[in-house]
Length: 277
Ligand code: NAP
Image 1 (cartoon, rainbow, N blue to C red):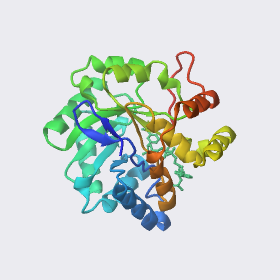
Image 2 (image 1 turned 120 degrees about the horizontal axis):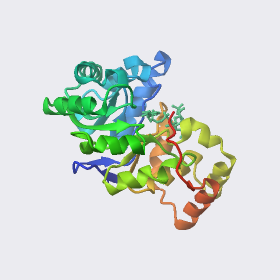
Image 3 (image 1 turned 45 degrees about the vertical axis):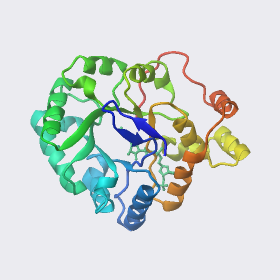
Image 4 (image 1 turned 90 degrees about the vertical axis):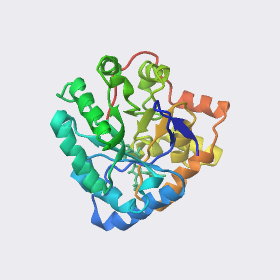
């Protein structure tokens, strides 16, 4: 398993598991739980969830899936911006802990920037960390201006990641935000790494994958895994798809293949507003 080093000195797997929409449909529950457990068996021991996903249903399903295996994994969840105030964050974190059936969250993220001042959220995160409820904290969907502002706030430069929309078709952050984070040793956690399956229908990517004898999802994930300091968190609730995604770890794209992908999905030629889903 390729690892990514967090600023705190801890290593996490470069390929984890997302959980948006997981837990929403009772008929899929057993397969979704089996998929997350298979992921842990295959070394995808980072799970990303959020209090927002299914308004707690996703965290509950994760709690069930990781029962008895808590120490194996690096657990990430997120607080709603409207719950990211001094007191509300503590209550939201307690609710997440209960749903996840654990006593600590490894990485607690601000889901996106809302009306609560960043300084207040950082104060809440530091207090939660001191109380042992969260081990580390970070942010999501913060653009370069937000990050510069965050860096001036007490505790702001202790964030362990910025979770961002990043995939072959969404390369805007490569212009300025990604280099800024890289200079500071802050990894990007790439969400929607296969663009919620839309990339799999891209004719150019399909042809690329067919030429090289891999699946389109594997091409998209192997590309992200070839980047420095990037963690990818594809979501699937199906064991077959999980096996396919996990196999991307053993695909090393060579320079010629990376150049082919650059031609299909050109890097940015100037600054772009941060995209999010
Ligand atoms: P994604 O991982 O790019 O794509 C997920 C979709 O692709 C699902 O419909 C899944 O369906 C399908 N899929 C996965 N592997 C496949 C494969 N090998 N072949 C065919 N279909 C496949 O999109 P995402 O869920 O938006 O992003 C991943 C995770 O990032 C989320 O689950 C969430 O944890 C996080 N996220 C964070 C934010 C944020 O604002 N911070 C926003 C979006 C997402 P099946 O389940 O049926 O396989």
